[in-house]
Image 1: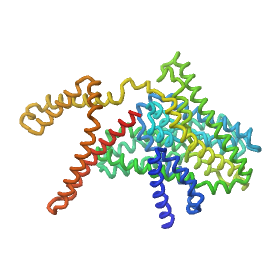
Image 2 (image 1 turned 90 degrees about the horizontal axis):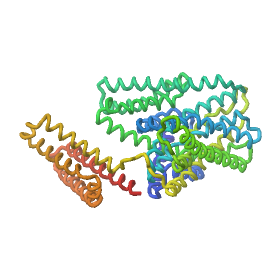
Image 3 (image 1 turned 180 degrees about the vertical axis):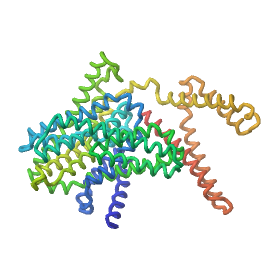
Image 4 (image 1 turned 60 degrees about the vertical axis):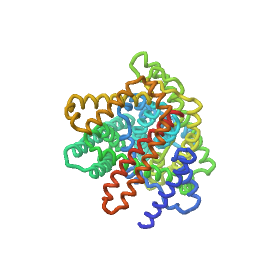
Length: 540
C-alpha cells in the first residue's frame, strides 16, 4: 500500500513538471501529459500502474463532471440548448452507428453488435483538451460554451449506447423498442435522481449550521452520492451528477457563504487539475499493456484499423457540425433559433475540436474478459487497442493543429454586441451608481458625521464621475495608463508585503493578524494579474 502511494506521489511530481513544460511551450497540458506518459511507458518503471475502470467511473468521473457543471454558465447552456442537446444525444448515436457499420465493413469477423460497442466507446469527445487550447487562443465565447455543454451530456449518451451494445454481445439478442424505452428511462430517471439529490444537498447547505469547511466537504460528497444512487438503480449516474451540479451551481449565492464560495473554488480547481493530470498521464502509460494484448490481428493491421476509425470519427463530426449549421439556417424560417446564420467558421472549429479522452479508454477497459459461457470476449483486445489509437490520434494530431486552425480561420464573435471592456465599464458604473444611491438615501446624515463613510462616499463619487464619461474616452485613457498603473500597483503590493514581514519579526505582533493582511494583498494581486491575463487574451 505504501509503495503504491509513493508511486502516485512520483506521478504527481511528474505531472507538475510536464504541465510546467506545456506552459513554457504554450501547449495544452493534456497533450504533453499523454506524450509524457507514452515516454514513461518505455522505461518500465510505472508498468504496473494501470487504469481501473471502476476507479475512473466512480472515483474520478463524478468530481470531474461536477466541477464542469459547477463552472458551466446556465444562461449560456440554456441559450445553446438545442445545439448542445443535438450533439450530446443524436450526433453521438449517429456517430456510433457510422462507426458500427464502418468497423463491420473493414475488420474481418467484426459483428455489428461489436461495432456499436466500439462506437459507444469512441463517440464522446473530451472537452478538457479543447477548452484548454481555446483559453490560449482567442475564440468566440459561444464556441467554448457549446463544447463545455456538450461534454456534460455526451458521456452519458455514449455510455448508454455502450451498455446496450454490451448486453447485445453478451446475450446475442437485441430488441430495438425495449432498448429505446430503456434509453429514455435511463436518461429521465438519472436526471430526476440528480435533481432530487441536488435539492437535498441544497436544503442541508441552506438550513443547517454549516461552516466553510463543512460546505467544501459537502460539495465533494454531493457528486458521489448522485452518481452512486443513480447507478445503484441502473440509471445514468453521469446525468445525475450533471443535473444536480447545474442545479446547485445556479443556487450557489443562496446556499454558500462567501468564505465557502472563495475557498471551495480554489480547492475544486486544484483537485480537478490533479485528477485530470493523473488520468491523461495514465492514458499514455497504458501503451505497453495494450500493445502486448493484441492477438486477433497483427500490430500493423491494428494500427491501420485505429487510424481508419479515427478518420471516420473526424469526418463524421465535421459533416455533423456543418450539417447542423445548414439545418439551423433552414429551421430559422420556422422557429426562433439562437443563431439564424451560423456560417462555416465556428462549425469547422467545433468539428475539429472532437478529441477523445479517458472516458473512452475506461469504457473499453470495462469490457469483461469472458462472456457468459466462459469464452473470451470477442475482439476485446483489438477494441481496446483501436480506442487507444483513436485517443492518441485525436488528442495529439487535432490538439496540436487546433490553435493553427483557429488562427487561420479567425472566427468573429458576432454574439457579443458589447465588448468585454465595455461590459466591465458598464458594470463598474452600475455598481458605483447603486452604491452612491444606497448611501445617500439611507445614510446621508451618518455620512456627514462618520469620517469613514464620508471617505467612502467621496471615493464612489470620483469613480462614478470617471465612469460617466464616454466609454471610448475611458477605454483610451485606460489603454494609455493601465500598463503603468498595473506595474506600479504590483510594486506597491510587494512593498506592503515587505513592511508586513518586518512587522512580523517583532514579537509583540500577532502572526495570524499579519497573515490575514498578507492574504488580502494576495487577493489584490490575484485580481490584478487576472486582469492582465484577460487584457492579453483580448489583444491576441
